Image (cartoon, rainbow, N blue to C red; front, side, top):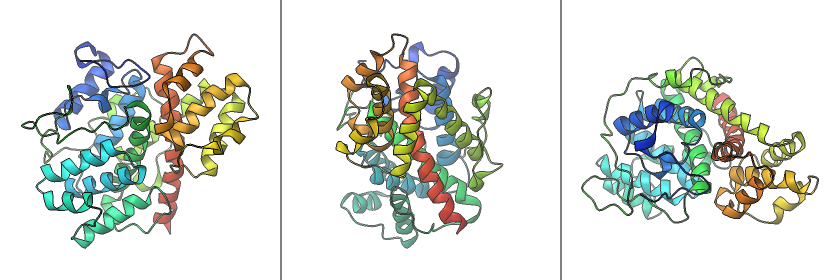
Length: 334
């Protein structure tokens, strides 16, 4: 199957070993077959394991109904305007037996159920001005973890998947839109928290957020944030400072590519700018990351690999997500 993943050569399931093979097996058993959105991070087993752990522990395991978490993921995908995930979670709603809900949202409307409508509004707002969360108590970590994972993976996917790609219905009986399109597994499985934590052994622990302290979701989020932060080592200190400052100025929010990026880069050398530009775009305008930009960065150092590419994109994406997380945490605390 020709790869639909841009910028890197992913590890195919039949060639996967070690951690990548283990993640593929878990994803295949508990979520979906291995499509391009899963394979895209495979050149970096560390990030792939941490990302899958956060998704599984927040979005798939736990006590919050799958329907509610699908609505949260859909809202975050709408905030990021990532059609691949918007269509994916509309399909999830349909496969969960709620086609009328999917149809209403797809037409630009709101769920008829006030509780689901409130969840959708909250999730969309996580990409901009925060609103009060329509939940509290034990399910908080699952809702928040689902939203934050979606913001992270949407940015990586926008940078690494072709524009316009959609996953189709993801139902086994339907015609797939492309070879290797994902097929969803049983969405009503009862999955117990914590089974992905062994995948995180040896990775940076990171600080667990207050909304998930002591939970597998908290460890997974902290590990993903700390692991992705290691991508700063691919930049000079000056370039890393520009990336961090620029993403912070925009509070991690998505925005169209434009000349707003030119001024922050002027203080850097040409070589430094190549890496910093890719990282900033990955956080704020990931759909604007081009093959030419990645190639220009690779040309600055022959040692740069696909593993490095995934790390740089994840670093920019997760730097943005940490600002979104801070906004959510502040709203929850208030």
